[in-house]
Length: 286
Image 1 (cartoon, rainbow, N blue to C red):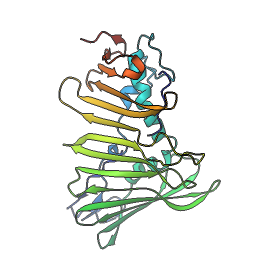
Image 2 (cartoon, rainbow, N blue to C red; image 1 turned 90 degrees about the horizontal axis):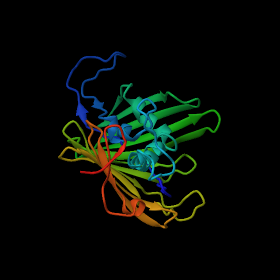
Image 3 (cartoon, one colour; image 1 turned 180 degrees about the vertical axis):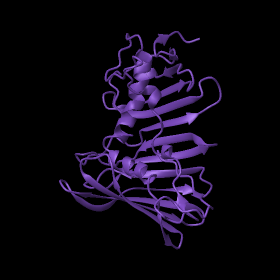
């Protein structure tokens, strides 16, 4: 991708109360339990644009318009930067939320629940404490993380958010780190039937690592579903440090056949669509 840089990086919580009086495997009474909804409200599936050596597709760091699958390469880099951030800078809070699904919450009374557990998948020891509070109009969520051993830190609030009582919408705010516990990423989501219908990642960090104004603030990547053969899309709006300006990219593709197209005037030099086939190879747009 030509001189493209995006900073940035989804967890839909659907509020569900189980009505069964059966016990869970660990003996916990599951009646009236506040259950965690879909993991995809924080992390959507970027798989159609991820590196896959078996299919011959891979993302490139530099966009090459002459490459046989340059259109797909370009699209993959645009969305891949956000995907990478979720599993690098914000890997611990994302994994901590995913781990919550393997545990049962404790009912603290007064419409409050709490999950407490160790987070798997890291060499360091992390402990998560997730809370959910039902307020009547929404559910308030808070994730606290503690680290033991090298680089240890005391419990701090790594992300928080809320979900509507009907489970159809919500948001998340992810803080950067224990050393810099300031908001970095906001995730707004909406559900369509049984899946995420719309979700937007917005870079909200005010200051960069050098404590200067973060020029990438307000950059965003939006994913959504739409009617037609190309039933999914990404809209990217991000600051390009080389151009010193924001650029816009629109990507549309079929989740079934993988065919798609991309439009990015600042990088292709025109307002035309640039297409690829089911193998990710460039083709003329119809």
